[in-house]
Image (tube, rainbow, N blue to C red):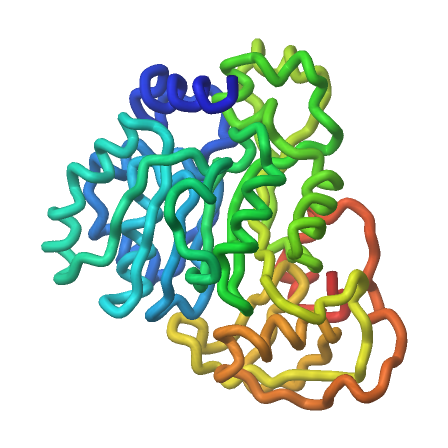
Length: 349
């Protein structure tokens, strides 16, 4: 039911983002100046069929090879194409013919606008990425914007993403999560499914699936509670609360189940374009340029063994262990995203 309903809801029921009945598939984050400039170069028809719930734009994308899971009409793909530049490439995968038709219709238009052609689109089901001829270990970054909730076999998506990423690569994606498991009888409701609600993972199940796929330490980047303003939809949900959240999951050997303290620290050089003052690794790591910033061993690896390494100085090593990094825990992660919490830098995960 999931694939067929997604194709019908996003291909036929919805004519544009204004037809949505909740704010689950809407983006409220303030784009950076670079993202705003890039969005101006995306065709209006492509933007009109956008149903994302977050900004899937991680730092340091220049020259990267990116895979967009559930690329829809192509807004994120064409945005990222400008950020990876002429030496990078973006591949979009989507299963809805009507959405793909819009993305492909304006492919030449965007190539002329950018001055280069570095985007392609594949029709396919993201639950079956292994059938699409994509080379394993070939992508620097995989993104997805409010799509994984729509598929039935979410475990298959996480496992395939891990296989397709290069070592040190990351899955950076926005999606919808529930504060409890959604009852089985709601999964077949076409409106709740199409509005990205009934397929939402309970956050604890997401954490388990991500780790089982090889992403040992999922990191929350941003989150916001969802507003369910449609009375009929709200009544069906019977008190379930939903959150739109962005996570980054790194493919790294050596990540530990807990954030362990090895007395390490980093100093950010301020050298990333668009991020001269602060580098935000996640909701708890806003690393100011020039400041010695204590981090756990997992965060160290996320910076030292990835495309971010050249932008940091590293202090310490793994020769001495001091126990669990202060402030780490296993409570529900949401509701902690704030400038005050991030600036404190005391908690790790």
